[in-house]
Image (cartoon, rainbow, N blue to C red; front, side, top):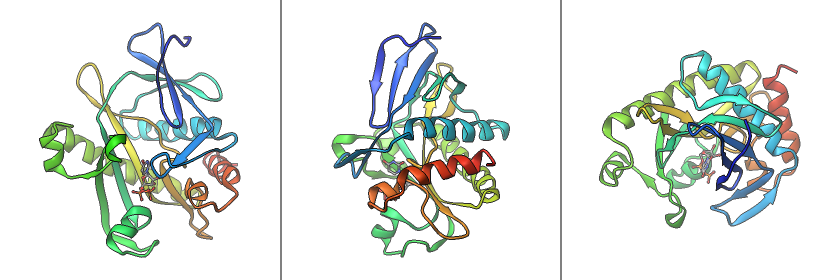
Length: 236
Ligand code: UDP
């Protein structure tokens, strides 16, 4: 399966059409941005690493019954996925306070949350991806109530599966963002990526950050951290 026209270029990925109208090729880039594009840079080797990490985690989720867009990894940076219409929501799942939640609610980073917290942001660059609730989602018709029910239940299941799996390799899943898509048949499936760009991973023994916060906060060792996550997932 080869790439046809470029359909979309995002901050970290390019998406191409293929000969099959139900399939796309996602190509992961080394480019990194943070703070709504204000901070730009590149993380050497990130494209390859995120391609592999995301596919590995999606396979684990598929094994546990979560439907995802993953079809087949075709080379280091590229993967064939099912074509979906992305639901314009960033679905954020949090186990431990960090990042914007810590700022917004005054909870110090690392505070264990009594219960898993689910948040939605409206994917809209011009508006800066604002936080929205069920009422906003309904008013803006971003998803139906039924779809949102499926999305929230899948997000919580994904959290349970990933938390357990990552614990085995001494990674604590602090929080993460997922996106969902609608298939032509109207089913909701997991899309986009799951990687150190979209999750907070802390080493459960040392507390060391193994994710994009190393880039956001200029902590150094960004490439090494991404590689370390991949190594652990591969059991090396
Ligand atoms: N996240 C993401 N893309 C975004 C915003 C957040 O992948 O556009 C992820 C982020 O990596 C973290 C989680 O969602 O794992 C929660 O992020 P938060 O709201 O704390 O925002 P941040 O502090 O990253 O601005």
